[in-house]
Image 1 (cartoon, helix red, strand yellow):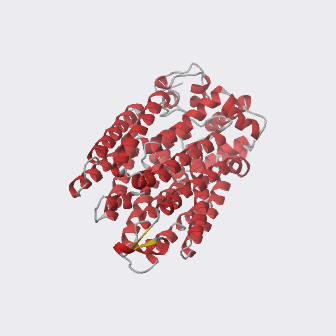
Image 2 (cartoon, one colour):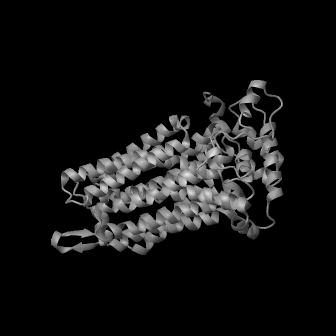
Image 3 (cartoon, helix red, strand yellow):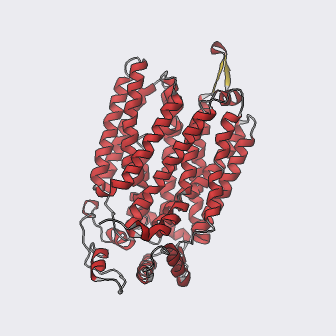
Length: 507
């Protein structure tokens, strides 16, 4: 059935403001890989290489400054849970924005001190960790069920768009010779995104789910009306009834303290399964080494001897935007598990081919072949695993411990990206693997395939209550797409029979 997007325009706007967090993450990830390849940056932060009369960055500097942001993001993800519980989603957005602004200013103001760069990147990381947890939570809570899947995938799409913008800016400013403006301009532009978020906070409501959990039913109703203001016929009664039923169920299963809430994620088998599926989704997304192409794309192309390294990175980000956009438009028409298995197998075989090419001397021809095949990996990842992993991690984080589960998921995400990002330069350069590093990522891609097969269920068009019941009733993931429930969920009594059937067809 076609989606009437006009009915959801304001809801889409609210989700879009929340997804500004994705812009921050994507931009930072892409601009920094670009400045690592700039001669002016190498001169200010590197060491002199006398034989080549040039400067180079130490492997330790590259690995530490690239990966340290994930430590900040991990801390930010952990801090997001208590802030969410106390101050709400908008409170986290405010704290995250201030943190990124402070980190961005520290980086731009630095004059060649590695420690200041590290401090700035940690502060930026804390803000991005806050954003990544809470943006996904907020989108999952305010997006109407009909557009929830595409709305959650919008997080990956905006992340891809900001990476493309950052890549283009890097390519432009890299031509500024003999001036630190070449890298300070990309650094400074990062601050624009949290400023945009601060403006957006004036327009969007707090999450109705958070209000309901705080026993503020009237505020939840007002928030729902604001979210659905584009639909003149909207009545909040059905959504309020579903929220109340969900909150009552959560309290029935709930824990009595914050400490017990964290403990239940380990000792309660139902909560443990939710945690495994949500954390596993983002672990599986990153363990295949995809972050290598974004964190080290420019210097990877330079190491292969390609003169147009910044163009290679720009093409990577263009393909990413196209692939994620296609996924949002048509991805929901394809069975999620089938899509994920097919595209991840494509990544696996592409890694094997790259590694095989690299077992021989890499001249210009093989280098171009490696880059082209890496584009297959980029497209396959961003059509399925990239956007769907974020959506799934948010959708299965249901129940009384949703804040804690999402925080753990994003911590898992950043721990995995940090591990891949930190080890890549040592494996590539110091261990002398070069592009044969692809063999290692082919092996870790098998982990992704195993997770998809055993743990990824289809949550398309399912309500939060239905997803919670999948866990409560121990329904295997392979049956999620077709399973029917005997229980009747809360519905709006004022809708037509046809709308009622459409709304409860899976119940």
